[in-house]
Image (cartoon, rainbow, N blue to C red; front, side, top):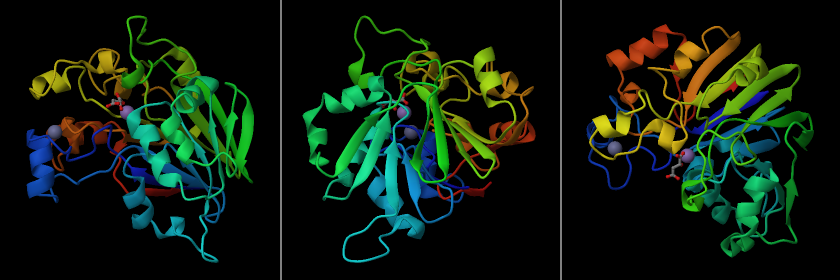
Length: 299
Ligand code: MLT
Ligand code: MN
Ligand code: ZN
């Protein structure tokens, strides 16, 4: 199985267009100290030929340009992307669907809860119904979006997308609106969980023994955004478990056997983004890799 991290940043990317926090400022001024990153997406293939895109970020056009394996290969119009899977309805995971118009056939997969919000929004009808098939997938049902690649979706603690929040919103609920994906090919397993509000026993059991885990690295501490002075929201309020502190993912996932553990969906306020920082070496010495765009794995 081949895996490429197309975008390793959370919503907004790095630098975020309107942000002058120290980390965004460094990403502009000293990219060798803070690598710029695009928004959250990966591509997975059983053979390097046909690809599944998991999440379609607003930066997708740049991401496809930057990764030649995803370029058109034959005839006048072509794409090696056979299917797109959504793990939630966040803007950073669905806005790229608007770029995938132009009459290119593929299948769009997601739970009813996630696909429903796309179906309800008519702007997504730019993906022509006669060429882009939308297929709802039940939790825990294994399906094959690309020949040779098996995928199973499972619920993780989360919340509805920011743009769908209302007074009934529950944080940490395990529903169809935030899912992880277990992706298998050739006897290898990848768990992709870019959004997760809390590490539970069920999650630990689910990912035990995977060859690689790509996991929610939005915030280092629950109060990153407050510490950075850019907002009042905690990680919990955004539906993201912190790396460190009470209930932090580094400690909570330490007992689980995992081949490679890599943080993705990293918010631009997270100090682990700074190369050589003590925060970076702290998570690295706990066995984690801080993901970056273009990081590729062969499992
Ligand atoms: C998140 O992951 O919390 C969302 O992407 C936030 C957003 O939609 O801006
Ligand atoms: Mn997000
Ligand atoms: Zn910033």
